[in-house]
Length: 295
Image: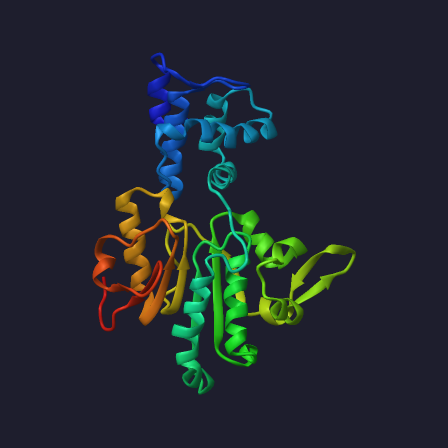
């Protein structure tokens, strides 16, 4: 139990949500405190109903009787802290979501580097919140459209997420056929294969999967790599953070991007803080790193 929760229990706390479980301001504040410390998530009290609906499922799964019990569990159990963060974040994704980003990647980053990469230059891309893998695989398919022989080149895509369950899904590379609706037909035919015993699903081909390395990573923690990356996708992530934390994330990301490399962000996000001085807008929610500058 957090110190804030202990203090709030010493005095009456208003009820924010009534239902199967009573959800008080003390419960909400304890959860918000943990979410901020664990993953940088900034929860306003106006989100109380959303938090309740997401976490009530966790209480039922754990057989708990109250949110006070749940707060105790989260404080004492690291695995459940991860489960709480996963429940509070939204893993909405699809193949080639925001298609202009992949078009920009192909035309402005990959194609201009064609000769250099064929002569041995390394190419590194990062999907910084990969969810269930559709984003990094869309990046891989875009790479393969320019470098069909990417397996023979020094090309790698890093895919990270703090949720181990979505990382495991991404590693499997298996998706329902209806999830492939936004994948161009020629790519589906070339880079996806049937799944034995499952006629409703397809698996990303070994060639495309080999380009992508999936890892668990909390963006609020240390980053065990140095880059530089030629392109970074960090979309619809910082919307969960307060303004100061957003600035820190943009600064850290921009420091790992290659000169003239690209950063792609969510449609409702804007770069802020020190990174503004080293990134220039280059299309819809697309930025390029200015040469020779560091945030």
